[in-house]
Length: 161
Ligand SMILES: CC(C)(COP(=O)(O)OP(=O)(O)OC[C@H]1O[C@@H](n2cnc3c(N)ncnc32)[C@H](O)[C@@H]1OP(=O)(O)O)[C@@H](O)C(=O)NCCC(=O)NCCS
Image 1: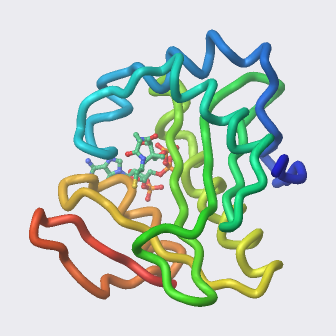
Image 2: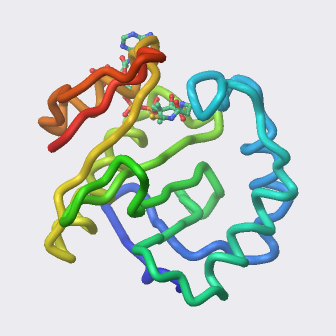
């Protein structure tokens, strides 16, 4: 399903458009961005970009919202809110990443605030799974009152708000 646009003071979370291809492929292929995501290696940015439209057009039985993130009219990142193998009833997992040029400006903090707000608006709590060395992401999540609830065998930290 195509998600609604979310506006915060500094960021706009809006549905991806085909014209985001170059920005999205660059983001999802960047090893610096991928370092603490998934298995730590960049995915196939092109395939990931096309998969987004597959999810928009599919009759997804699970909650799965995906946005392109803009600041000052420019593409700066990617965000997801979804049911995963880590969520239980009434929970959604957040996923987010920003282009490196946009780091350190408070956008990550604003993005997590937007995602938790969206989850609350549909009556859900939020969880996150984070690499234990991803200090910036853990810092932001603690700022938004997420607390560690579990560590998986590979060290991944599960946090809940
Ligand atoms: C994680 C990410 C979204 C943070 O975005 P950001 O816009 O830089 O975040 P903010 O500017 O809002 O805040 C970052 C905070 O982490 C702190 N921080 C950054 N690097 C840090 C480090 N190595 N150790 C401790 N704190 C760190 C910053 O000082 C800042 O805290 P402050 O506001 O108290 O000064 C961004 O780095 C990113 O996209 N990383 C790659 C993808 C990723 O890891 N996503 C999260 C997967 S769980």
